[in-house]
Length: 351
Image 1 (cartoon, one colour):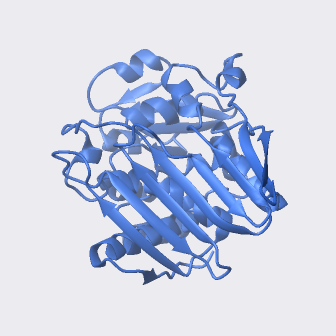
Image 2 (cartoon, helix red, strand yellow):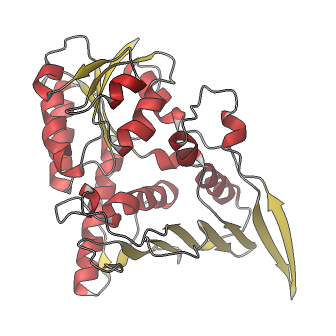
């Protein structure tokens, strides 16, 4: 068993990390660091409840630490855990700067510890389906790839750290990191980026909307966007190519299922996360044909199964620290492009 500690029992820790960790064979959720309150103890009575980082780092049996705290604290906590001989998983988007990410990669390599970032959206069912379509060439040569993550949350929550004026806050770091990671997984390094990052809500302090365009040497354009003022939401995915198009509406249901209390080990999990078919479009002259296409099942638990296997030297790490660093390196020119209102070239660390 891989003895694991979770730091943070806010939304990310409570909704994603604790349920997934406790569902993986071979991983034991042994300790939870919750500085105040008893929610963690009620939800996971077999876990030790820790109140300070120093207390957790002194636990010699802990092999893996999962950090699900605010982005601003990722670097210092991860550095302390790696220095104490623990392997580390950080909630996305790694850190607040690419330089901090590089420092953690060096520290993990020096100590020979695993370091990964929770880019769980690689295991969204609709992304897995889009990935399959792309590799199979079902819509021909891809010319445009659109990826949107829209919500409708018109009220600003001033108590939420993601909406405070501090490094790592805002929707670009929250959702943009997922969309950019997916683009890099599918298509690799873009030539240039053009971004518009903005505040749309009344009284918003940090960015709550963005549109990003990535241009590739093949002529492919990847467009990523998010808004929290989208009552009528854009397609989650729209792929256009020389042989047709594919469109998917709605978000992957795994987050909603986890929020409702369902777990991957429950008998009804597969039925709960099943999605309606998306649509594949093909054209013959002016004639359009629409074909329903099943969505592959999503599988967030696969992330931690891979972390387990990597720690046991049975598999290569699926989400490497270098891959997560490349997301950070792409986020930074996105901000610069938006501020300067121009396209910028992109240079990323080699894989």
